[in-house]
Length: 623
Image 1 (cartoon, helix red, strand yellow):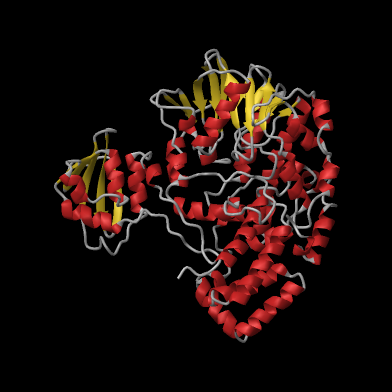
Image 2: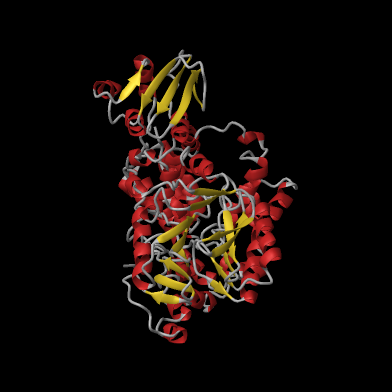
């Protein structure tokens, strides 16, 4: 699959030198990831004892010796360390976990209650969640779902809800969960989805070694939003008996997710850590886009767990990666994760207070060796560089204080001026070629990116920039950076981004207020200019109502108002179809599916709304 000539001599040397970074050939994490292997994805139960299972597989030294020149060795270790997929036994006859990167990014965990399986998190998609649960039923015990716990407000942990749950399933979620899944993921969903194609490498096939083999079919019809008539919102730390199992709920709001919680199961001395302690450096700001996470707060929440449960804990598991066993190992892991995020937070502010900019701080701050040697602190998912910039942004915003950056020219305009200053396209291309030939890939990207934004039709520049991104991708320890560079190269060669699928089926699962808030950020203000009015929207099948207020080209949502100028009464399904333009208002009126006294206003409002995901460019100009 790989041709060694794809990697330049500079890349080959850099990856060779990287072997000295830390003990990459250590077997510890590799063996931990195998522990508890119970059954394969095809349902075949494991009959090997742990030592025999280890002997049946390659050693980490053998794996690293096979690392292709187009992969960073640490990245390659990560790509191979979890390729044992299937059902894992965390506690015999009590706690099981499906871990399968070819199926989904997230784990699927179940706890045996008195009457059935208590599910902890529902993976990314309905199909993945169904398959994972079927695997549990077929290999462990065929029991119904007795309850579902969602640990936090990220889609890879709740998107598959309807694969195992329904509106009668007891559901437990952290405080602000429903507000946050809409606020963080829906309002900027179009941008996040497009940026996520770079972050997760969803368009990549054989163009690089992928840590994840799944294509993450997050089409609108394959994801769901949790809903149950029997929902318990965890508003404070508390202990609840769920189907005979005690759960100590530990709220960790605004850590890895805005709505977030961990659980301690005292019957097993086990912590379910959500995504707050994974086997890699996490993102304090995710490249796909989200709200910045405080390293200080995150660290404090981990320390609180150490103080309360550190003496008793014997088992650690979470929403990603493998479980850990033994008090000494777990406490070392917890302290390492606690110190990692606090160090990034503190050192960023230390240098910011000395006048350094985020780019400067990210360039010279390194982790102490006591942290950088730990596999769970490596730049495998989040990166020190990106996280430093995030903590600067958290306190000081995007502006670095230099007035030259107060009102910079937009990318296309500044690119044209740079190309002119460089003496034209040919001279600029030659500068880019020289940088590429010298292995100065970051500088080459800077030069060639300006050239593409000045003239995206320059095919020679496109291919050279794509080759530069190729070389950068080959040296990345971080899968997100590797996929981002590789996707950039792919799109430069293909000349267009991937088609974006309709979100209409997903919108059908949104509560009315959340959907109307989405309408507000989808309005073309020129179309509603001059309108000053309000309309009551009544959805009788879900018993929801809001008032939409239009003023100064802005659409507001009120939960109630007694003086709305007009009304619309319909079912939730038809409201969605109206604003996604699947049907016209006249059609709905003709079929007696709506009642309204505001036909002209509604037609104007519908015309002003565009809910279709826009297929926009990232590595070349949008206009």
